[in-house]
Image 1 (spheres, rainbow, N blue to C red):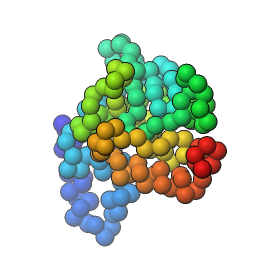
Image 2: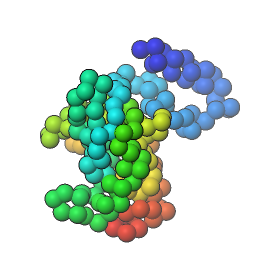
Image 3: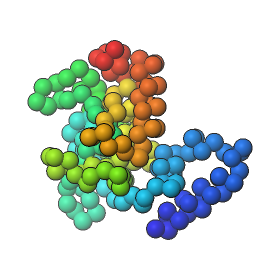
Length: 176
């Protein structure tokens, strides 16, 4: 709660000087909280990278959970390897190596788990939005379940458009 109050205070100061600060340049985790319901944040350690949009993590209580990264979809590696699947998985392994500390962030507009029981979360490492990085590199596409827009939909769509236009990642090799 203190963190949210601090973020709101920072946002208020930034809004008071709009000619000096571009709010669109703020990190996703700050700009997404301005005026948004409070998100749940949980620290975890990466145990395994399952594919380009799924991780197994260990929570502080020692339990292990599968996490599906919210808002993105990457080519599959199971049961059959799809074009770009191996590259998307390798990219996620670089962004979130086994043993790395991450923060899982819920989206109050979305469900807590998917139909497979995986936690649905944004994933941050060192303050960076991992899903956004996958989209920017062209290793993922935006995924919005049941036409229920997530809080980061606009930023994610912008990143996807940029990757597509620049023919990055799977946009060049698979989806072009």
